[in-house]
Image (cartoon, rainbow, N blue to C red):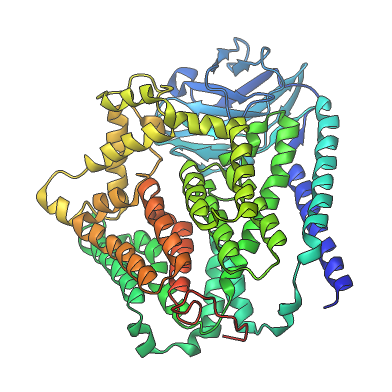
Length: 589
């Protein structure tokens, strides 16, 4: 592939990015001629029976404004439940809460009124959350069940108004300018020369690597297809010889046996085992891959995904006039921000240690990834990355300059400042000592204090010596016990949250035996990294350990796929030999 062909292909990629951004606008927004003045609700229950409350997402806000609830008025003529929004400035989105638990409600209409003109909301498009379940929407009437108080319905799209036209145009222009900048940054060192040397099995491995951060069905299918293509390479003797494979499989069987013999529903509900299945499948799959540079595509996928999230964040920030759309959940809207942060961090270190690019191009790619890492906003990952990166490049002034620029960007970026300020306010820790938190929106409950409260209530689930050893079970019943503890503590609004600590999570579910199985992965990873002087493996085991201290890594399939894949690839002799050098061959598997 000559340079002209590469540039043409790269231009098509940029056109794809632009098209995705335009498609994002059309899927996210819907036009309204005037602001919504009233919301009218018609249902088969009285106001007193359901107690609906309305909240809106305001013009320049991020998320819903829960400080201003809108209470309904009953229309004397029609018994309609009417919410007046005259003080709302062009509401972007509407959310309807039902305060009481009700077995079944028939929602007949939700009507938006602008200056006397009425528009029906398509009931079958509404989203439901927090234990509100849609029973049926086939007859034009929405039947819902509110299983616990404060379940809600939400309009799926954001409303745009005539005043937004110039901002939408400016957003499109901004996206185009960013793509032009990316073209001049990347086109000179995009290397597509290796594509013609790749076989179908190796392409399938690359597809699997690149699909890990895509929706679950996509990477499940890519794993199955790739496994079918490489399974012929399976060698039982070599598989057993690599003890790290057995450590992951042992962890899987500990959790499987817990599901069968400790969990309340036992074999009637094997969904937890389905979640942990990659711990069994991935060691077998990766052992079948003989020679592959597949991990190089993690940095590629990190940049692709980062560009997509950045472009769509430009759209949001310009339309909503709020730079907070460049931070954390609002930035990493298509994936989990913490796990994307780990992907970006891994990519930075991989490029630093193993990339064969010229130094200036390595610094460009690392700079872009640092930028995306800061936007993703995981405090722990940012801190760890900077500390480890300093230890690697402290004698390299150019590389250190990338770090300094990143620190400066973080210091002057308000959304990231806010996230770090949360952990610096010592007074907020007082909330941990309170037996019951009275204020449902207590400002002291932030990212740090919420984790500490979740850890407390998770540990409180364990009550007996057998439970200390074997846990409460990996099934849903254990989640329900944690939710009950949170409600009693006054943290009912956070009951959908996980433990946010894998060690405590697995202790709650599988007891001391589960914790020991998990620690075996960490200990063996450190052992292999130190024995083989493998810097990349050592970095990722450190990252993996800290990730488990702040996230329930194995409760998300994404966490299992990413960390298990990376760790198993990094211990392969065919990928990195004892001197820490990457396998330079790019032949087929």
